[in-house]
Amino acid sequence: MPDDAALSAAEELALARLALTEGDLQHAAGHVAGALAQAPTLPEAHETLARLAAISGGGVDLFPLDQHTYVGAAVARAHLLAAAGKPADGLDLLAAATGYAPQTDWAGVPWVIAPELTQRVTPEHVARILMQVCAAVPDPVPRAGRPALAAYLTLARNAVTAHPEHALLLGAASALARRLGEVALAIDWAARGVRAEPTKLGEVWLGYAYRSAGRTREALAALGRAIEHDPDDLAVYADIAGTLADNGRLDEALDWIDRALGRDPTFDCAVHTAHRLRYLRDGDVAHLVALADFIRDHPDDTHEHGDLAECCRGRPWLGQLTPAGGPVAEALRRVAAEGDRAATVRLPTPPAPSALRTITGAGLRVEVDGDGSPEAREPRRADAQRLWRYDDGVPVPAVPTPSVAAADRLRQLAHPAWPHPPAAYDAAVGLATLELTDLVGLLVHPPEPPATAVGRVLAAQDPTLWVRCVQVWACLGLLHHRTDEPWDGSTRRRVLLDLVWGVEDWVTEAALFALVTAAWVDPAVRPDVAGVVAGRIADAAAAARTRPVPIATSLAHLALAAPALDAETRELAAALIATAAPVPRPRNPLTRLWRRLTAPLRRP
Image (cartoon, one colour):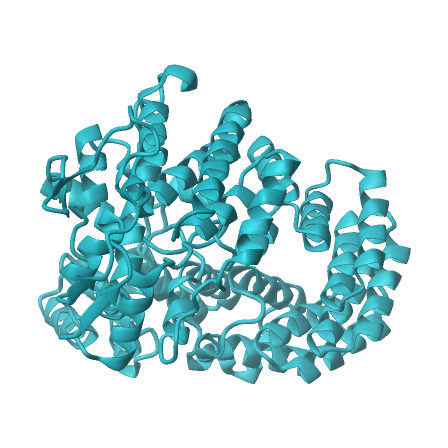
């Protein structure tokens, strides 16, 4: 690997040619690998590689494989192997590179797309390559990612032309074509494969192709035939159930999944699908919690599932931060939409501390018509830690400013969306080494947003979102503080309870979400957390009878996300949501931004 990873492909090639002139083949190989990593189809890179091969007697040994092989070196070795008469081995390395970085066109070179390649590689090997590529990419592949895989589709076309009756090849080619949006071609190839040799796998490929085309009846028929070939393949039962559910036939879907569970109640695909479908049926978060428990207790599932993330996506607190409610948030969104940064915002009552500091921090003037309820400025419990003090009615932080290192660490993690609560908990482990004073300080001294495109948009369009992100992730960080302490007497529990019962503020929501997340990941704390949630919702509901409680709706959504909550509290939470104003939705042109921001968080 070249020492300077920032070198351009042209610079790498210039250095490679210089090294060749000096007879330094090892350094020349490193620079050629660097060029191929950045521009794998660049003709000049392949010309230099050919020159290196000619000088070194083939050049394969200049690009050895080990557990730390640079991708550019693996690609160079692939091309040299093909030139040496071993194209099958070269295809293996290119497919591995595609698995490493599917968005890069590693295979778009003449020898891969040449029709004669199919006479030098067996159809079984081509089928395996196509299946390896399919396993590395989403289904379907987004349009922007399809050009990087076009060479594999050309390889599939050439192979099918050369071997028109090879069932395995036809099925694997169908799988790739389906992922690349060539649905009609996928159906044709899969159907030809089934006619050539009826098998379970062939029928599954055909069923998937029909399903992608929206031909549900044919898809279900093909999957049904797959079960006739192998009644014990419960993954196909789950596929049928998923297909039925996607078409609104939930009762039939549940019947199929119950049949699968009757054969094996621990089969991972069936369990995941069952919990997802039951949640779709009644909306009870208990199904998702049970699925999270299953995932935790079965870390060695046969493959990755997305059912839990799919159910949580876009749902308040299950998969994303709930937009702030109340007049301050509404005013900030209105100002952002109108572009008037010099506006004066008139409010009926003094806002909560985080909201007031956010709106003034955005450069807006605030005028308050009334005094509001004095109790809204006081902690809900007298012994709760105070994050603010008031100077002439203005909230001032009562805790120290966090360290620069702590602010930087949190800035790297804070995001308004997560796949599901356990994933958010896992992501927050990066805050485990922060001091308690730093984590608490971040709640009232939020750092500036990151210097990224998303960070700049967050700050400009809806400052409430960034502040709430910081508070949520700081509280998730508190869950990782001194985890060696037993929960009941732990520092993390005590501090989070203080925050939950402090003054009504966005911090209240963040702290309660952290407790709810703790209950998701640790069944032992669920009764305790359920009691806290019930008490806090009851308090908010009682206060809302006499004065506005801007966080009440969000707290109600949090309650519905909490494990093991009693039925009476769930009914109270549902009633609070039903009687509240609709959850604020971003206004155009912010709708697309919100969707982008709340896309599932991916761990590196």
